[in-house]
Length: 293
Image 1 (spheres, rainbow, N blue to C red):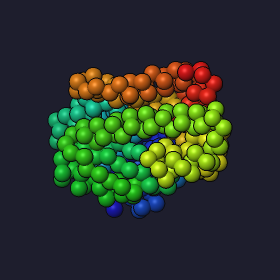
Image 2 (image 1 turned 135 degrees about the horizontal axis):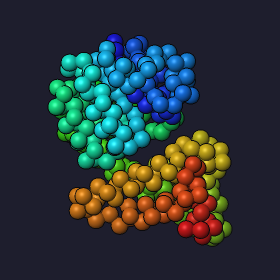
Image 3 (image 1 turned 90 degrees about the vertical axis):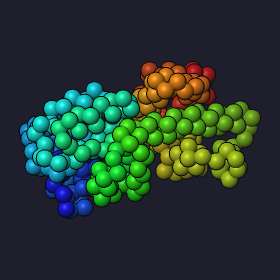
Image 4 (image 1 turned 180 degrees about the vertical axis):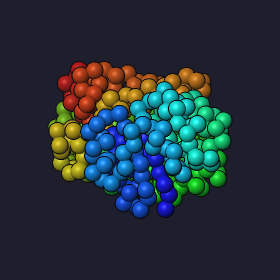
């Protein structure tokens, strides 16, 4: 078993660190939020006074932070204090350029590194069923994989540094676009007098089938576990979907890719998130129904 430092113990990082404890790893954690530290401590995580203190004895360091600037700041801070040959894993969702810059920080300090953003939300973090999309050298990925398997169900090596973030950004752009399409379909069906259950029964077994429909259906009833049955409590908040769609558009601009549907989805979620950023992203159906978008 490994000695692991976990920096960022929030809604995603806290349950992930707890699953590492359940798998038998020794985990020392750090977060700026007292409540997050208290919850992680209750799950068995040893709490350090600083991020630097957390990493000193760790073979592996995992970070789960809000944005690229936070990852770069933390990796730059902790790298000189890491053990020789330590492996740094970042599971935040950040822009590709920042991810590759973080890899460079690790390499300069003689450390291995993997960018490993996740899909699966808070439910997947708690249940250890996350999907990890990984970028980095093959030997670093091989070293990271057993640790990631304690927190997830599917671990995919997507290629060199930054490719994990590239996969996450592309995946979530597809998700944002498909959720809007599903919501528009149900909103139209309602106007046409078609019941939600009837549309679901048809589309879920026809060419309209997709994850946004069959697993995360945006109307109450057909999929009892979807946030639509719980007042659109997240799940995956609209503000986070907007963050990912903005990252997709930054990546598209940088790469010279034409993504008109991604741009349209980003614009719609930007308007929706203005007053509803803390609601599940599938709640955009209410704004589509009312014509507010």
